[in-house]
Amino acid sequence: MAEIIEGWAVVKTVDYEHQAKIISDQLEASGIETTILSQKDHVNVVWVGDLSEVKIMVPKEKLQEALSICADIQLPDMELPDDIDVGPTQES
Image (tube, rainbow, N blue to C red):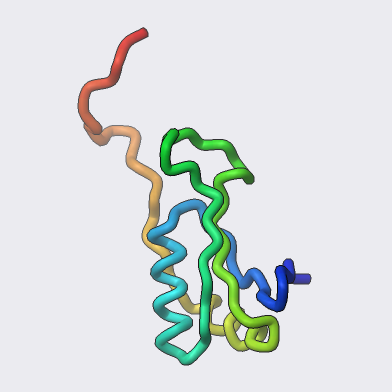
């Protein structure tokens, strides 16, 4: 069962805001209104599990249609390969 918040249903939960934007854009292109509820802390860049989720929400009466559309959306892989150089790190 999808989470319902004041008439809006959570259609998908992702880890990154740009992933939510990709999904939101696809849903809106299909005529489904969306809103994004981000629990990200923009001051401190810290991963805090479920407290940093980004939820894409649609009107609850559009949930089934939105779920069908989301099933076909491919999100970019966010994992960095182990051998990639991401620059210098700070030593403690």
